[in-house]
Image (cartoon, rainbow over all chains, first blue to last red; front, top):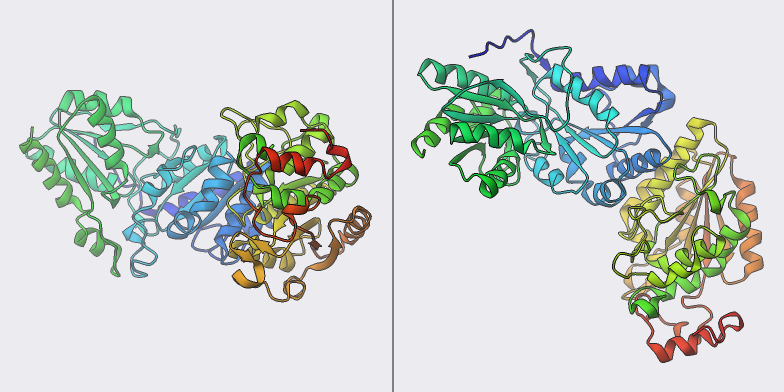
Length: 317
Length: 261
């Protein structure tokens, strides 16, 4: 199996902040908005260097999204940031009408996504946001796996013309993808070629899946490991090419089973290549307070859970 | 148009006719033959109460944004003139979709902010229903504009006192509306929306108040269904299409449209 090294753990939201800093210096049309969470969104550098291009919206997210749309109409490239729970559910109708239906070039920076938000608990831990956002026509949905990929994804989102929901997290996590990667929206990244099972992961579950694949390899199971960072548009071709080889699929995500990447993959398989599939996801529950690591274990989003899912699907082949 | 589609919102459309005609005919700094989506160096208008699209489309057409003959396609399958305004079929004059209420003021503020960043001294105008002011997002936007001094923005409220379920005062009273806007940091003007001279005068006054640190709001008193006697004095015509006989009767009441049917 390909060896992946953690070059030094960092939080993915810092990857966003680093990219926004670069965009501030290189793209004069980029502007940023934040709903009273500058520090959390790592927007401090941008705010300090480009105060005239930063809009503090206060705790008023529906207004923030509307203003982002109006800025985009007038030629700006707005990044609107807040916690994922507020960046998706709270502003759904605004994203629907003022952004997606109107096709305004708005980028939603959705931080602290998933259960790894930790101690704040379920009111803040959203695990339904991939589902909500992928259901909006014209919305591109990206969930990068580490600091380097989040930075690259942010830069790519600024280049792309159209609405983007960029989802990243709070905790410090392993950083293992290339620092100089060229991020291609909609393109799956094959991390390891294998024959027995297709293991698809997104976001924080990619590193978890790497650990699982290494353990499975030691047990003689050949894992084809794929990072799908773009849930929409989905790289169906890559999924089918792999499933044709392995005939068994597992999808791992920090999200509920309903409506996430797993459901997107199942949709492709059911239509074109019915294949046994297992989910590593949260089965229709809200989160709770705890540390990030404790919660990933409790909610079955950890390495043993990925290993178990692979073994379950292999039994169904 | 509403008769032709057998659906639509004639009441508010008729009430706001003088205002939109004045805005597009006399006030906006714009070029109908050269509509710029990004509104650079042009005054922009956002219709937040998108349901009065028949009026907006009519005014846009008659001001020269597109051909008058296209109005007959309103609400029909494949039309650029969708039931509620949207830019997605490419109709000139429309920059953002509206219909679900409460969003237009935020969008307008965004464009106003962009103009300030660009050193662009043109203005942004909006129109809202009074029922629409029951939406919370309006007040998020109002608070922001007042607090941040978005003084290149002129919002207008169609203050007709009626909404779908009855008089606004009965459904959910807006209370002392002028005082509310004032408390949010806005300059407040009142206008008789069905008196063209007053419309022009107050729009002029509003323009002079811009650039002085406060956004401007015009509380425009109108009569829903103005100009058609059976549509006035009632909230019944918010969203109801007239039948053939009613349409003929309505058009006969205004000299300019007599014989149009």
